[in-house]
Image 1 (cartoon, helix red, strand yellow):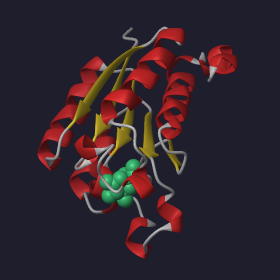
Image 2 (cartoon, rainbow, N blue to C red; image 1 turned 180 degrees about the vertical axis):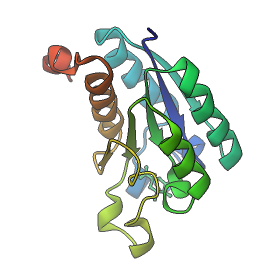
Image 3 (cartoon, rainbow, N blue to C red; image 1 turned 180 degrees about the horizontal axis):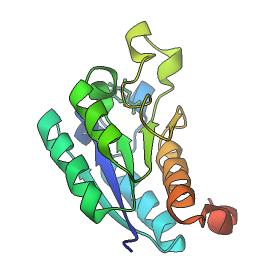
Image 4 (cartoon, rainbow, N blue to C red; image 1 turned 90 degrees about the vertical axis):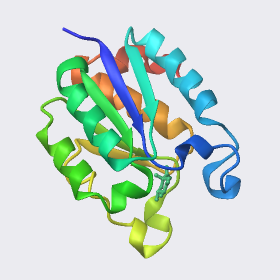
Length: 156
Ligand code: DQA
């Protein structure tokens, strides 16, 4: 069985660090990925972290996850609120999917309070900045192999 977790990032997340830092913080996606990699190592999991600004590419990667991943962590960016295609691709997966957002989407504009992905994901984590990703990874690990509790004391 695979121990790979796909971490899929949607539009504009390549701009993290410079994009609206008041809302999304100053860490780049590469820095967030590094923190996740450290956590993944302690969980004995492998990450495959990707980012695309294109809806269809994200759909293709979700299809790829069917065969190659034990779980998916996804930050759909703006597509979380609009994309039926991504929602349907998540619904088609039999592996656990955890939705993640850096910002607290429930405390922002009204249009961000609904997520298409949340409706079909196993759960969502939002509002903790870069830590959201590490928490989502823990949740995914817990769902796919039950080891998150084991490494929880190592969270920095
Ligand atoms: C986001 C929240 C979305 O509403 C927004 O469109 C993003 C980032 C987040 O991580 O907080 O691009 O997904």
